[in-house]
Image 1 (cartoon, helix red, strand yellow):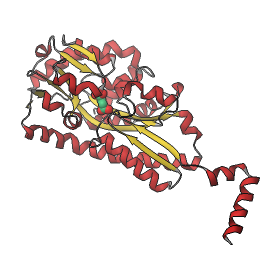
Image 2 (cartoon, rainbow, N blue to C red):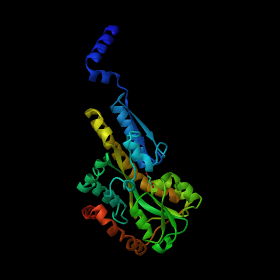
Image 3 (tube, rainbow, N blue to C red):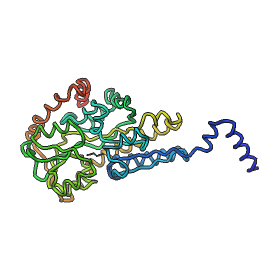
Length: 330
Ligand code: SIN
């Protein structure tokens, strides 16, 4: 009987190419590369996506997650994606400048008052449209995932902009962030995330800007004497895939993967909310660094110094996009 079933299957395979492909197809390998640790919102989202995708598409997909820049750093991952060497990544929104200028909106200092405002903007029509802004460059945005608001850290206390003068700050590869630090007469240096700890430890740089979860999970707080709670900008991510890969998937597989991704993102966003406050407290409790609060008047000095950057990038980003972001604060 088993022999007969096998023979029938073989005959069907020989007569219809499509069926033969299905019967003999190896699982689709999806490499998901990112640069942060597993105990972060993005790290947890990637693992949740693997769990859900493999559970719902047994034998059809195999998701390999590579954290901590093990496969690619963010400088190379999008090129690698277009070459088919990696299928999913979630670089920070500050790292897409080569592909679209509009996403620079997320780097404008003091634009969003909190993460709820960021979320409202992302889920609104302008934020959703920005997910498609990479399509002519061969990339499809699958969704946003939060990390959190950025804080400034340094080897000396930063209370007002004058304290940052002449200090070297590591930044992501964003020209807006260059202007943001130049606006306070500091020296911005674009460096890969994987080098930040060593640069801070060896004092090759003086400071950086990070959300609480990156400060904690990468131990940056252990090599910075001060963290100033500025909440001056946002560090969030876009989950991206190659349009060619995505459109080439069978419809049912693509649909199931998209649902799994939506659920994984919701999970990651929940983790982000918990981590922002949890990791902040863990850093304070560690006593390895001093977390500084600034007064409203001190904060206003940072706003006054950095806000002119908006105007500088208005043409590249689009006035309407900036306006929609401002509206999301209400
Ligand atoms: C990340 O959170 O993915 C890294 C961001 C950075 O390069 O600072």
